Length: 52
Image (cartoon, rainbow, N blue to C red; front, side, top):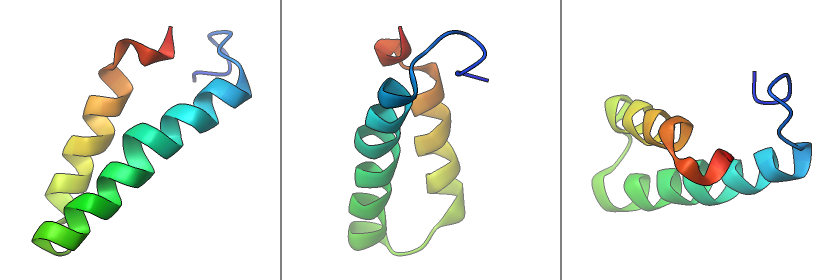
């Protein structure tokens, strides 16, 4: 969806790395595997202004 909106693939990968991957790893390390927390991380990343 982001690609269709004109956001570069490089920006998508940057946001994925910093806003999803790193935060998910931190969450799993501190709280264990809790899928509902992962959904929250992804939802927050999708709503961030970093996409613009």
